[in-house]
Amino acid sequence: MNIVPVESPNLAIMPTQDAINYYLSQQTEKTSKTYASTLKSFFAWTNNQDYRTISPFQALDYDAYLKSTCSPATVQNRIATLKMFFKFAMECGLVDKNPFALIKQHGVPSTAGQKFLTVKEINRLLAELEKTGKREHLLGLILVYTGMRISEAAGLSWSDVTEMPGGEIYLNILRKGNKRQMIYLRPDVAKELVEFMDRPLNQQDHTPIFLNPSKNRASVVSLRTWIISAGKRAGIKKHCNPHILRHSFVSLCLANKADLRAVQEYVGHCKITTTQLYYHNDNDKVSDYMPHS
Image (cartoon, rainbow, N blue to C red; front, side, top):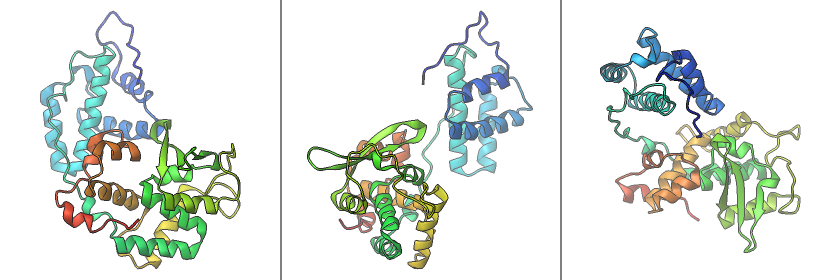
C-alpha cells in the first residue's frame, strides 16, 4: 500500500471520521465495508471519542469487553483491524502512538479439522456432480484440487487458461485485491478442463468458463447452489458448500507435509498465519482424509 503522508504542520489535525474515511479509501470495497463496521462499533463504544486521545488503557478495556461479548475469532479480527487503523494513522503522521500495539493476539483455536470432507465424501460429491453434467463436475474438480474461492471460479474465462511449452495447464485467476495469480492445474483436472473446452487453447477468448442457461456468466450464487445441491443429493451430512472444499484442500495439503509457504501462496492467503490455522497436530489422523490422485 502506498501511503501518502498528510501534509500538516500539526501532528494530528484530521477529525476522526475524516481519518477513518481516508483509511478506508486505501482498502478494497469488500474490505472497506468490514473495516468500517469494526471502526464504527469501536468509536460508538468510546462515545465517539477523538481517535487522537485514545489511550492504551482504553484499548485494553475494549479488548476485555470484546472477549466478554464476542467469539475468539471476532475478537481477533476486530483488534487486528484497530491495530492496522492506528498503525496507518501513525504512518500518515496523524497520531504519535498506536494504543492497540501492546495487545497480544494469540491464534484462534482452529475448527478447520471439523470442516473438511473425507475421501469418501469428496468422491461422493464429485460423482454426484458428474451425474449432473460436465460443467458442474469441472467446477467440483477445480474447487477440490485447487482450493479456489468460489468467486474466483465464477470469474474464470477461457482466456485465463494457458498451456505452457511443456504441456502444463495454468489458470490465471483474479485474487482478492484485484491481484492476478497463475496457478498450476494437476494433470487429471487439466485433462477434464481441456475435454470440456470447445475452442483452442491460449486464445484471447473472454467467454466465461461457467455459463448459466442464458449463456451468460454464472453467478457466485448459482455456482454455490450447484455444490450445495450435489452435496445434499450425495447424502453428505456436513454443510457441503464451496468454502468447505477450500478448507479441505488447505488442511489436506498441510497434513501431507506440503510446504506451508507454498500452500499460502497457492491459495492466495495474504498472511501465513491464516494458512497456519489449518495445521493439525494429529497429522496421521488427518492424512486418512487425503483425496486420491
